[in-house]
Amino acid sequence: MLKIGHRGAKAYDPENTLQAFQKALDLNSDGIELDVHLSADGHIIVIHDETIDRTTNGKGLVNTFTLAELKSFLIDGENQIPTLNEVFDLVDKKCLINIELKGSGTASKVVVLIEEYIATKNWNYNHFIISSFDWNMLEETSKLNSNIPIGVLTEESIDTALAFAENIKAKAIHPDFQLLNADNVSEMQKKGFLVLPWTVNSEEDIQKVKSYQVNGIISDNPDKI
Ligand code: G3P
Ligand code: CA
Image (cartoon, rainbow, N blue to C red):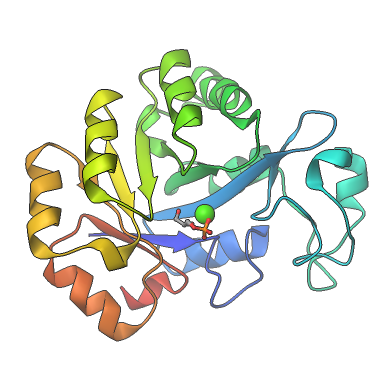
């Protein structure tokens, strides 16, 4: 049962910050989940929304700012928006990193960065899983490097996700936990996929999905899994 900290450990620290990722490590998480967009100058930025409005003291679209400009904004008065490289360096192979592709253009940049860490820093493919609701980006990822593990995100249909996962030879399916029951979890696993539902936070929901024998859980409070 993999314990994966959603946006770090969102229940305890500001989401998608180095502080939250360190917290997830301190809680002995097996993995962290994070979201990525590109800056105007092509850096991979770890942030959930396409704007900086909700989480920082600035306003505007992430992809209209350079990295230097994005670094001038603060999250909760003290944290800067991290780059994906900074998160990789913090984690340093200590847990799985689930990178959710949000912004356009992220697939090819993330593939290059993963390849660089594998080639030069002794990481391996099992340290990563790339997921997205945008299945075109998952297809692009798989075409660029078929060794990178893929998790198919769905909030609509297990059947459609299952068909797509078979098509691109994904490693996992990441469903909204409310779509799950014991039968469909077993069906996905029999077809060879890990089942990693999100975002399961309450004790009651955690117990429910655990009873379906999922392979892991993505949670704001990974310590409760
Ligand atoms: O990866 C699962 C989950 O993070 C998807 O939803 O909106 O939190 O990115 P969201
Ligand atoms: Ca996410």
